[in-house]
Length: 83
Image (cartoon, rainbow, N blue to C red; front, side, top):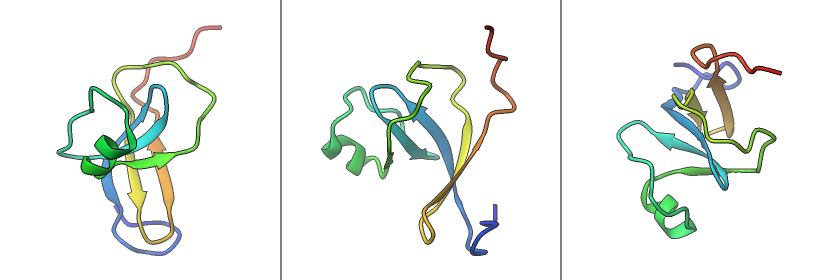
């Protein structure tokens, strides 16, 4: 996918949020331990905490632009939130 902000090719992966929010590139498995060292080894991009804070499956598809540090997250496949 092309970044809508700068035109660079975006990296495909998933958005993960459990104890910390991060982008995980395609081909990397979710780590058992969420330490900075492990996430760096997995080429994960750490993100600020976000409001959901709850684990959800499936993980939403995401695209990361390393040049302009923009993240696009696709929530269309997730079940609706009941409330």
